[in-house]
Length: 114
Image 1 (cartoon, rainbow, N blue to C red):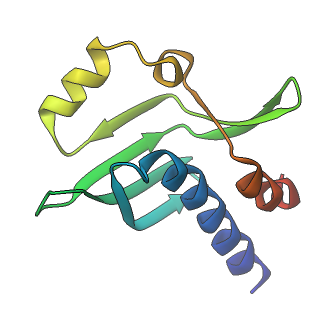
Image 2 (cartoon, rainbow, N blue to C red):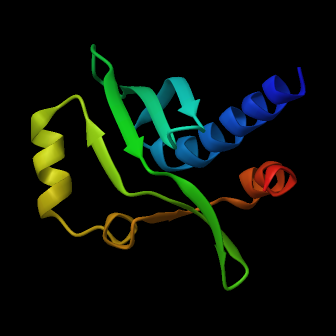
């Protein structure tokens, strides 16, 4: 039972982190986290789109750097080939550094867990 509460809190915390970045473009319709393999799977419904987009984050972890919390990752893949190509060719600070700063609201939840 306690494990389910932790998993649910982790799901909500990570969904808050990701939704913070996705909000201008759409919403997260589902989220699944496998803590044993350190993988996150999210389904997004982007504004103006009829079909959802699947996003898979491999090798996630949480770290604190200079008093800020981050979700780190090894790689990100999507269900759209053109987006995967774009992610490999453009330079976005978060992708280059393989980390996303955690908004303070989500950090409160995650601080309890980690």
